[in-house]
Length: 216
Image (tube, rainbow, N blue to C red; front, side, top):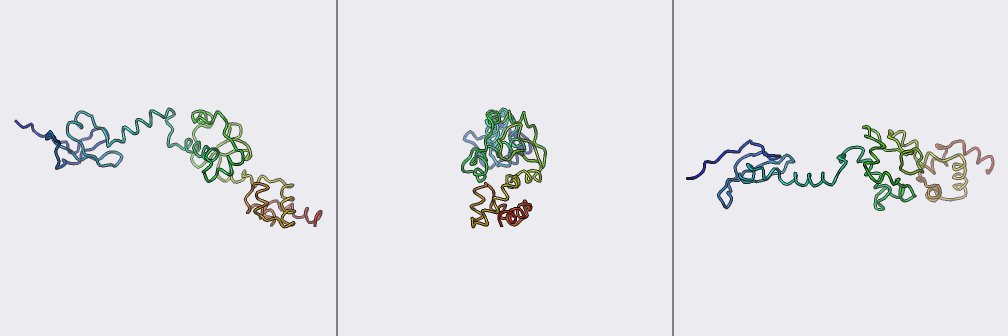
């Protein structure tokens, strides 16, 4: 006697929700159900696999479980973890766009912060709207030199605004001698735009009168 089909339409099994029966059958003549996974993927599953909880997802559950097994801190996807990953890219990945301005010029990550758990213990949750800031732009990434700061504060602390008056005087003298802005930028490790701003007086305007008086 043929067993009566149990309608599974609308029922949930793990991450799967049954939409309707598929026109296909298994080799044992078991019903197959068209399901949608919580992740959005469509997936067909036979009745026995659903009812025995043998299949709980389209496969994403197994992937997520494996990922969690290799991640002890449970902070993947958080703002703090994102800042930590970006910091590592800037300092360690020679192919990263910003590497020349960080790792490429000797900025390092302290040994303790090479492990995310330690970084998080020291810095905590990153507040929304803030970014990881080094108080000394020439210093390394370490507890005594880092804080969460607004982008406005970060821009103030960039190396380009850390030039001294003596630096500004030297930049003007070099430009007067014919050196290009690009070459000056390499000497002082600043963007050529900032070398231009110093020469034009929008940065360190005090420097120009000194140069004109002493070296003009």
